[in-house]
Image 1 (cartoon, helix red, strand yellow):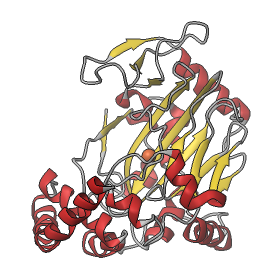
Image 2 (cartoon, rainbow, N blue to C red; image 1 turned 180 degrees about the vertical axis):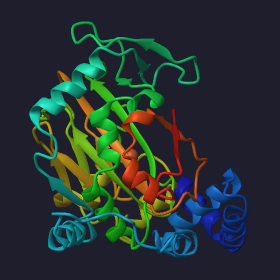
Image 3 (cartoon, helix red, strand yellow; image 1 turned 30 degrees about the vertical axis):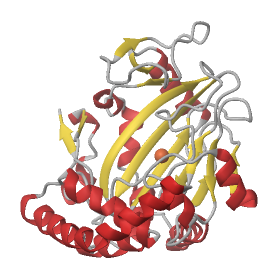
Length: 340
Ligand SMILES: [Fe+2]
């Protein structure tokens, strides 16, 4: 308790300096198109002390208010508006059958037939050289297996999703401006450990790499109570949505007991079949539940309203999988891609 009070006091003392640093950071970003960790740390402290309100102003000053250049074809405005309204109200929207069962099986076999990076568990030193191995359900060696970042978009039906008009329009509406593709990851979580793993995001936390963003989480395998349903605390994506006691602890993981104490009826566990897309504003509290058995394959795609925040790490995509029409008319949106 005393430790948390001290942290809050530190945030308060640094508040004027953090405003100044953030203004400098925004100028640095605008002139040099770069980020620096000093400015990012200020953004995090301001978020914690203002209950998230500071992000609104940083977003206003760093985002692009123009419209995308895409054809809506048969996508109805009402549908996009309804989805975005639900994300505004609750922090998430569940889109059933976004991918077909066959598409999911194809992505899963791509995952199983590729060498993956393994995340051992909290007990091992994560700064050690990343190990690579194949996923074998009968001989599990880690809490999480991840597709190397630059291989994810070397699969056609995965790269297609980042050019999906519906996803782009949802982002445009939610950000009230042009979205920017941030990254895409593909992973398999396992029941290797029965304790929540911090780095595999199995404890409640909020994301905070940018001022505003949306995550598109797609279940590639069926998810029930046993194989790690994604969990989200409804409403915590709003300003002052996260309890000030939790925020006073800074940008850290929060134990289940504390989240249950403040948000007993608001915790949503997404038990859904493969192909389900969960669109989520992950500035709200969320986690992947610890697996009791089996495995969970998840595709994670993020779009931001701006590149301000942490260092940008671009992602490679195979040239033949780029949707040339959408790409050529929306280069701003795909500035974080390297075409190979
Ligand atoms: Fe997260």
